[in-house]
Every structure is written in structure tokens, then in C-alpha cells.
Length: 121
Image 1 (spheres, helix red, strand yellow):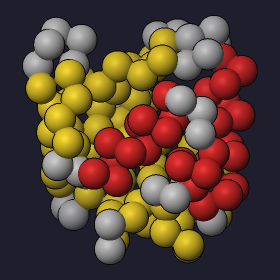
Image 2 (tube, rainbow, N blue to C red):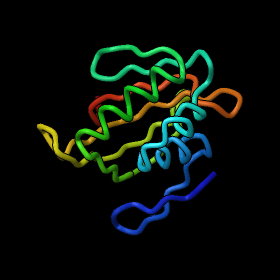
Image 3 (cartoon, helix red, strand yellow):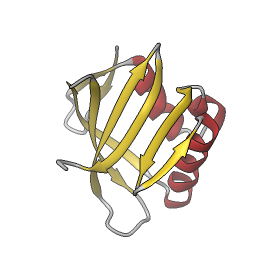
């Protein structure tokens, strides 16, 4: 587990692959981000599926870079075998800021599946 600080200064422990995911996203490092995902990883974001580490990381970085996205993590809970991170995304995009839930499924120290949905859905 790695701790991150929320906007109110609360320490939030995250599993290592998830902490690495947010770090790689923040620094726009494609190789580091792809390394967080299993070879058969699947991302579901805005109703579209992306398969494999390169497709997943490519989509995330393309979406985040253009919008200059900043992520503020608010909470992390375990539920039904998934790790759910609630975060608010800020940036140059319509609807900013937007609260999202990131539903991570981890396997063997890698992200096997990630589903990004509106918080509370």
C-alpha cells in the first residue's frame, strides 16, 4: 500500500499498482502507465472498451494530456473483489470538475480491469 494525500490532507492508502497508475497518469509516462496493466487488461471508459496495456495507456494519456487533467483522490474502498477509488477530475473539458469512480480489478500485482464511471453509479 502507498499513501496519497486527499485535498483535505487525509492520507488514503492505495494498492501499489493503483498508486503507480495515478503517478504515471499525472506525469504522462506512457511506458510507466502501460506497465501498470496486465497483458490482457481491459479499460471501459465513456462506454468504449480498450484492450491491452498499450491501448489502455494510450487512451488515458490522450484524454488527459489534451484536457490538462488533474486528479484529486477522495476515497478508496474494497468491494466485491474490486478496489474503488473515488476521485474528482479537474481540467479543460466540459463538465469540469467531475466526480468519478475508478473500479480496479487487480491480479498478480497488475491492473486486470478498470471501469471508469460517474461517482455513485
